[in-house]
Amino acid sequence: MIAAVNFDVSLVLKMFRIAIDLILVWLLIYYVISAFRNNVRTLQLFKGIIVIALVKVLTSFFGLTTLGGIVDAVLTYGVLGIIIIFQPEIRAILEKMGQTNNDYVHTVNLGEREKILNELVNCVTDLSKTQTGALITFERRQSLQDFINTGIKFDAQIKSELLKTIFYEGTPLHDGATIIKNDRIVASACFYPPTNKEVPAKYGARHRAAIGISEITDSLTIVVSEETGTISFVTDGDLRPVNPKELRAQLVSELDWYHSDEGDKQDE
Image (cartoon, rainbow, N blue to C red; front, side):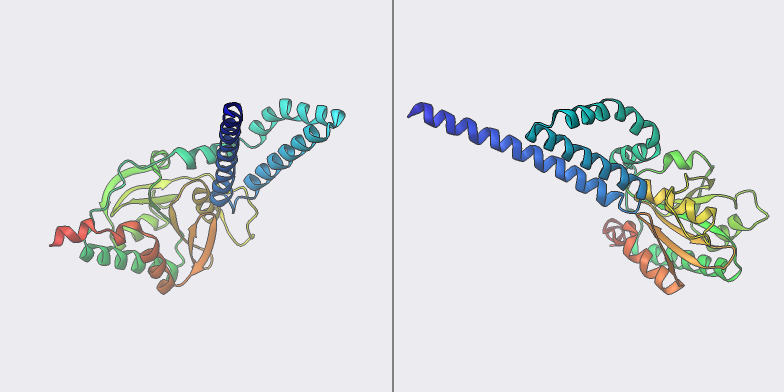
């Protein structure tokens, strides 16, 4: 009787460990697919890994010695090949999983939020009308410090005239991205790794850079095309053309500090 009870307990514990193991694996797969669903090469990488893992399980279950040997060889020597071929994607995964913003705070009161929003929308609208190319990125929970370091760092209020001056073709800061952290402009002339996925030919270097930074961070980016004046809003590898009204709605919806309670408390 005691032996039977011990057997049942050990069996339950074993099944529990297996269940936890499977849940963690599927959560990891779900996270990666969700985070990089718009990155074709990353999805191809994980689909390939899943297929190889399934084949390995089947060869072990059915005792397929020859096929099992081939799979073992692929697993042994293929890891190095995957690291070399998919180095940018692997780096992006590690950056997105491990990079955090320790200075992520909300101290913007409600009145200032509306002023900042108006400055941003007015600026982008004017840039669109004059077909002045622009790339503006908002830092969120994941730090953009590595990309800030590629540009010219400064600290300034968000003003329409300042942003328009930055992106004026005659200024040294116009080529590259301007990064906004909370309610401050912190850098300009910053450069991002372009996306590896196929994009329509009508999109240029700014659009590819905007998609690229959105694939490896949780940032928000506004792009203004210098060819057409079209405004685009980019998040999670997804680029969407918007008009000024839609842009304002997107910023209200996506900018975390706009919904902060801390700034409201300071007004009371």
